[in-house]
Image (cartoon, rainbow, N blue to C red; front, top):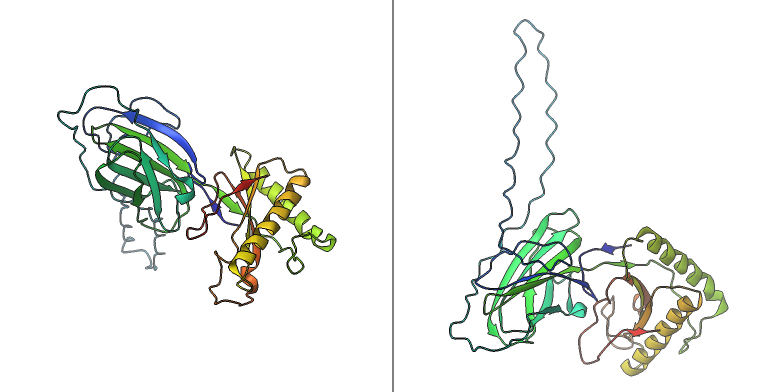
Length: 328
């Protein structure tokens, strides 16, 4: 059962960090979550120098010589990612006077890709740059990234990638957007989700009806959902997402429709059994296979329904078909 944490998107719970204005700002100090105080530039403190140990003293000459036990190696310090390159955002001279739209930042929760190390941002003013800091479960910084956008118009999709220094579960992403006049604003993303391991419900051909013989499988899955919720009572806003998938036997249109019916049937079963948290569903047909196959291949691994607990809606496939989570 995989767990992904961060101050999040998908949709990711977005928490306002801080905003500032006037002059170029670089590396704004990370404020507390939901803070509205003005952020000020800050440089993270340098790590303390590594400790050294004195070499063991040799035994006196009159003592019997023995082989000393090797010193236990000190635990390896987890490194933090290097700083992102500096990008200056100078206020524009001769800017037109008058009321201006408040600088706000939004992150497309459905487009936060933790595996692909990419997210998308929009600002309500012309964009100078976007900076991000990715923090792992260890508390160490996995990546710092900054990308210049050279005055991209308000509302433009601003895509930013990052390169983590090691594989580690992400616990938080801080995103800062800077406009062309030296103002900045930030949000914290906490993507968290748990995929519930379960035994697949078997449906009859072209049917979405849950047979009585399959109910014990769903009851076992419901128990796992409740156990996961009990372990994470500190997290508010968890929802259950049911995602249906098929193999490539049959037409893509038929498979898409069937996967949606089956996902909805299972979601309705959970809701009918008294699950109090929000429940949403979507079917993806053959558009999101585990195993890549050609047409008309009966691949059992691709016939599945995923049960996902998350703070934010899971990322949706992109392509010719438009997908969206439907709430019960």
